[in-house]
Image 1 (spheres, rainbow, N blue to C red):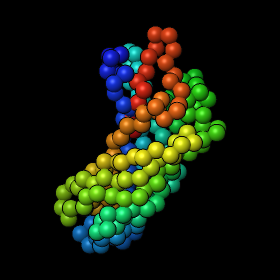
Image 2: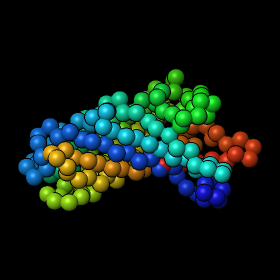
Image 3: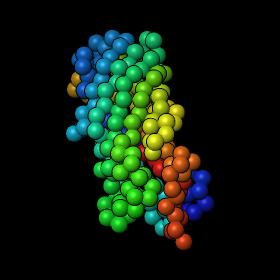
Image 4: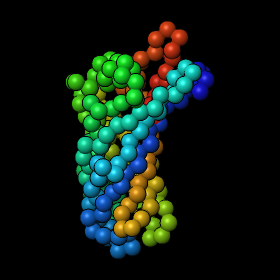
Length: 188
């Protein structure tokens, strides 16, 4: 990634979630469903463009439960990510990230609170929905719409969402130093 692209691009995070259906397999879905996210089967990764290389890391799901009403277009519930366990695999970079950027000792979790949704689940094949809500990160709430691709597999929903977090715009410190420049947005 070139420096000019870094300044324009947002960081994207890929969120792969295994949602255990409380009410059974997809074909029999009613318009209202309560979904529980399985922390053991959930993978949350992030990527941050930087001079010379991209930084990749992992976040960890603490808990998550959503109630989705496809007929009414409403959603409720929360997805909680453990900010303290965020890691890139580089001890010094991780220490700086926690102390200077995330300030995870003060803000130990990121919480997405759902309030609405757009789209419908298809009875066959993948579905595209938008989960609407806000994310509490670094002590502030920010509106966030998650574009989610969903498909059914063995009675479970598999969901994948990629979204951008403009962390500098949202009040976190830019970790760029001297010639090492990083993007101002993280892709989750």
